[in-house]
Structures are given as structure tokens and as C-alpha cells.
Length: 296
Length: 273
Image 1 (cartoon, rainbow over the protein chains, first blue to last red):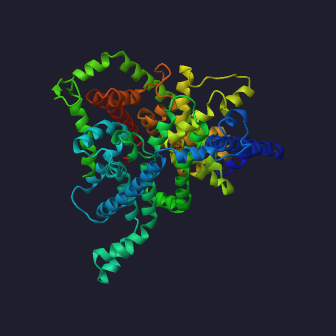
Image 2: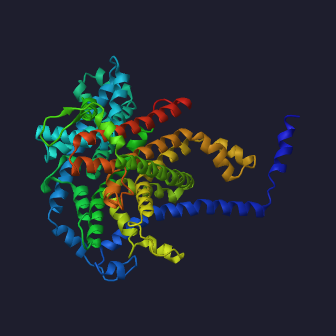
Image 3: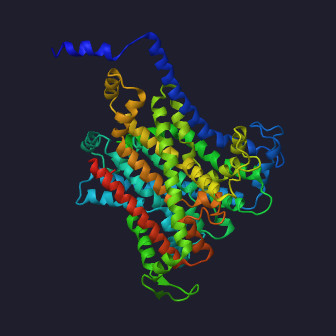
């Protein structure tokens, strides 16, 4: 009985006329295509529109609604490049971004290696504790860090920004690396150990080369954080020469009177492009680093 | 060391919020909870709390369904369409300020693309940044745009773990795609959905750059959420002790969200994520 029951049930439940099946399939296809199209438009169209405006003249922004500008011009970019403070801000952003990426990796690798390889008392608790700061938003740090920086006389120093940003990314970095190091087979290192290599050589020639994707991932994440951070820059800088790009762009939007729309668009595009460029070149590593480390 | 570096400011904030300095450089007076009493009697501050709740709720109401739909669609995008996953992440790479600039342009009353499209459907001339309700909506949209990649990827990650056999079995039993989504996939990804909700509310609760550069808290304080109030108190009125009390209020909201998430993840028997 129990064997025959399903056999008689299923044809009843599923009337498989070829027409109904085709209907169903095309309906299903629409149900996937419409949201995908919406997703692509939602994500890309605002950026494309901004790109388009950045190549228009001020007058054409309202006169010429097309996506492809009729009279393309570089005036918007020129006005930004000539803007006092843009070059400084761009340079500062680069220095702070690279500095943060470097410092984060240098501090996170040894810490994570220790967490992953050595069994010491309270290491689980300590590892959980490392994550605690991640729960504190940058916003909450603004005022206290400002007061501390004023007290230390560290306002306007790029190093202050690098240290502050590194502190905010480190928890994530350590966790990513721990996940990664735990996956590096212990046998590999033990074999090297038997061959008489020191801790340093093991890390240098076995662990680090294997950890390359993770290092790139963490570097890119840290760079992104530093490149895009606004709150802490607002709090920790006061003179024009020490700002980074988001702050400078913010000041540009605050100018009263006639808005330089192509200029703002061009500025936004120029803050986006370098990062997209870096990301596209390294995406391969970032994706594999994230999937092997974090999503474990 | 790291923990200390970040925890110290918080302790400092709590401590600092208990004092009041009459003028810059003056010696601080201990006022106990006086700052908080003042704050909650200040109609502007209470208004900001209300605006924050509206903002966070709006971001969730727009963001979570949108994230769900997009994640479902992406989970079916196989083969050549996989590149869409890379595209999805683009807003995540763009700073809050640049996001605000983009939205100022596409929502512009004179030449904004959104008004042009709406005009085609008969909705004329929306003044996005001078109408209080629309300004709030604009802020929510910009916030959702910038944080949606995280939501989508989280939910997508959940959907990937849903057992394909289970869905096939349901298909054989004649369940429609809609039914399979509601009855099987969504119940199975509740942990990821909860995490996405909490994360999105975190981001909305502490969003300063997007709103500040988009609306500046206006018009008539319609978008003056707690972070904006914090910014104005600390860096325009220079009342840092009062600002630290606001910081503590925001942190308390944050902690409440964390507790909610903890409760959910315990209920679903997860390891601490």
C-alpha cells in the first residue's frame, strides 16, 4: 500500500499539460527578470546620471535632459581640480587610506595568528572581546575622540586619522584573519617545524603567502573605511589643509547661492572612481578572501 | 589594547555627560544627571527622537522588502547574470556624502530624473527638499540606497544555505514559487533577516553624513534626527558635555537593538554571529 500510494498521488496533483508548463515557466522568468532589471536600474542609474551631469555645462544641466550630453565639456572637472583644497584632500585621502590599510594588516596579522594557533587561557573570551568595539558606532566616538584629540594636541594630524580609522577596522580585520588562519592546515606548518624552520620562517614562507587573499581583502576593507569616513574627519580636523575627500565634498555642497551642479557631480565621480578601480582589480582576491574567511 | 582604545571614549562620554562647562576652557561642574533632565525637557531633543524613530522605521519599511525581493531575484540569477552580484555592491563603495550628492542631483526639482519620470505618470513638480514629508522620504531613500548591498548580500547568503532538495520536494508537491518563498525559504532565513534588520537600523540610527549633506536637517527641522542634533550641539553650539549626553542616548538605543538581536539569535539557537 505504502509503495503504491505516492505513485497514484503525484499525477493527480500535478496536471502536466504542456501549455500550462510553458505558461508557468514564462511567468517564472518574468518574476525573476523584472526584479533583476529593477535592481540594475536602482543601483546603476543614479551613478550614470551623475556621470552624465558631470560632463554637462551648468546651463545644459536643466536644458539638456539626455543621458548622453549634447555638448560634453570638462568644465565640471576643471572647476573641481582648480578648487582650493581638492588636491590636498585627494592626497590626504590617499595617505590616510594606504596608511590605515597598512597599519591594520600589520597589527591584525600577528594578533590573529596568535588567536588561531596558540592555545592560551581565555582566548575565546578575548576574541569575543575584540569584537566589542564593533558595536560602537563611529558617530558615538566623534565627540569623545574630538575632546581627547584636543587634549593631546593631535587635531589636524593625518596620523591621528590613521590611528582612529585603524582602531575602528581592527576588530573586523582580526576576525577575518582568524577565520582564515584556522583554515591553513596545521600539518603544513608542523612539517616545516620538523624540517627545523623557526616561527619567523614559517610565518614568512608558509602562512603569509597562503594568507595573501585575506591580506588583500582586509587591506581593501580598511582602505574603504578610511576613504569614505566622514564623521571622524569632521571631528578630528579643523584646518583646510588636513581634510579628506568626503569632508571637502560636503563643504562644496554647503556653498550658498548658485550651485555648481556639474562640479559637484564631477567631485562625487572622482571620489568614487579610484576606489572602484582598486576594487575591480582586486575583486577576485576580495571575494575569495571573504568567502574563505568570514562566511566560514 | 584595541578594545581599550575604543572603549575609553565611551567611558569618557558617559563620564563627560555628567558635567557641565559654562564656557570653553572653563572648569567643569559636576551636574550628575542634570544634562539628561535638561535634554528630556528640551522640546527640540524630544522632537529629534521622534524624527529618528520615523526615519529608522521608514528605512526598514523600504529597505527590508526591497532587499528580500532583490536577494530572491539574485539567487536565481545564474550563469552570465552572476555579474549582477558584483554590480549590487557598488553603492557600498560610495561614501555617504557622495551618495547624498547623487540624490541631490537626481531628486532636483528643476532637472532631476525622478521628477521627470514621475511627470510622465502625471505627478507634477515635487519639491523634494522644501516639503518636510518629501525631504524625510528623500533621506530614507538615500540611506536605503547606500546600505541595501549589505542587506541583499546577507539575505542572499541565507538563501544559498536553504537546502535545494527541500525546494524541489515542494515543487513536486505542486507548491507555487510564491508559496515556496513564503513557507520554506523565508522561515529558514529568519536569522539572516533579523541580522539584516538590526544592521539596517544601526546604520539608520547613526546616519549623519547622508542626511547632513542631503537636507542639513531641514526643512524646518523635518529631518533633524539625533545624529544631526548631536552634530549641531557639539560642533556648532560647542556644548560638548551636552553632546556627550546625546551620544549616550544613541548608544542606549544601539544597545537595545543589540539585545533584541541577541534574543532572536538565542531563540533560533545560533552561535553568536
